[in-house]
Amino acid sequence: MKAERCDACELIIGEGCCCGVGPPAATRAPLAFVLRMIRISPSGYGHVEGGCNHDVDGSIEDAGWGWVPDPSPGLWAGISEHTPLRASHGNLQCIARRRCRHCAHFLP
Image (cartoon, rainbow, N blue to C red; front, side, top):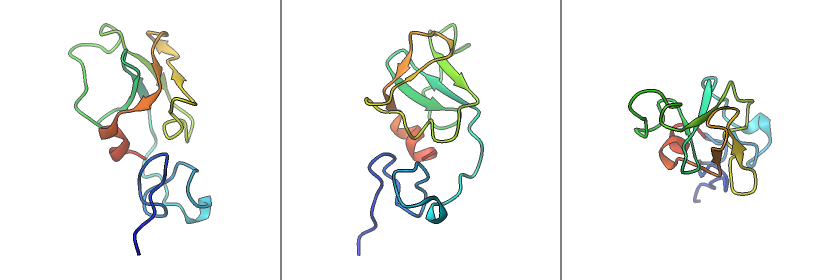
């Protein structure tokens, strides 16, 4: 039997998916740590700290990035074309419509 993957985070349902699209919360794997910030690139991708190598030299603000500090649970998993995330700090014009695929594998 092939494992079923979540449409939102592409992780196996019940073995890493914690975005709320998969099975009920009681059967989802718990989130291992608290997300401190979602960084948003000027190209419209959401990133998490340590999730990829798409860092910038110097400060993210000087590079034109925006960010959302202390995001609520599920905010990361909900980033999509239908539910974009606008930066609340830094470059307020930055809107994440996609999650970095490297970061998405790092954090569901």
